[in-house]
Length: 375
Image (cartoon, rainbow, N blue to C red; front, side, top):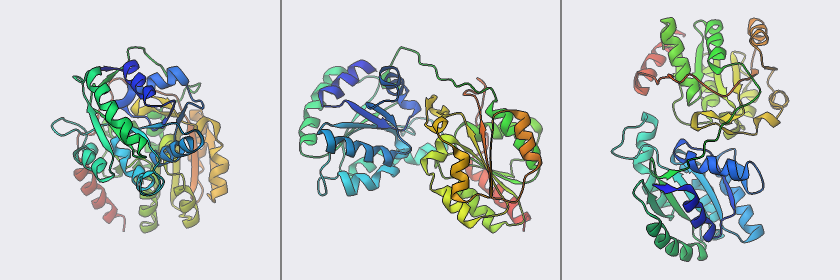
């Protein structure tokens, strides 16, 4: 097990003083250390998505000559392929970067289904992108890291990128870091209220705890899961999945239950939703200004006027609420869509929150069967 201070010291010795990325539960020791040491500052920026982080890192290198560090879950490797291959690569600009990648779905370890294939191809993707890597696990010692550092310095000096791939338990940080905001409304309360109002409408929920809570609410009410598509992976794309459904089922209301981190990741989808202007579309963003499902690190959503962004994109109506009675008032008078509803919520969930007991394939089959009934 590598202590985070030892790891960061080695990064510093390779020239790193700037960090950017998207939080990951596997990298929680690093994320907590960065928040504790730098908060959100010129030395540390939590990006909208992983490609955004690579571009920030490139700008940092171009303006300082110093090596940047980008951290991400391996599920975000897809978002970095374009800027790595067409910007950083030594056949183009030769901009060096150090990547720290959390390895979810590591072969041989049980993980959630959305991580299995991604975990299987993680090292292959790094090979294809010509990124040399070192895998760090609970048995990696400082001498091994120092030895690899010498090799990495040569590669970085030649304009190439390198990566540290972190297995479960590979890093540790003993100091506790807590995240909270001023809001009191719980996400589970919000979702339950939407479920009550939606009745037999179609619901598409974003990845992480939102989908887990939706599943458990259906279970507690003895309701079918056929109305819901649980987007267990593919962060930031639930709203587009919901749009694709809404356009093909115009006589059925479609809800997208989104999160602020997911919305920020691919916010351009809002413009497409508004341009297509489906009358049956309701876009709910539960905004706790945090990447809660991977630890609670902050997003910038508390500094944004999401209502004005939605209206500027062309949504017919947009609302922002932070109390249950305000939410009820909006839900009881829903107009033709697309409608945008921001609901500000607290950070946190039940300690005993479970995970869906059905497989993604089972969810898909039941959901598609229900959509056929809606014709």
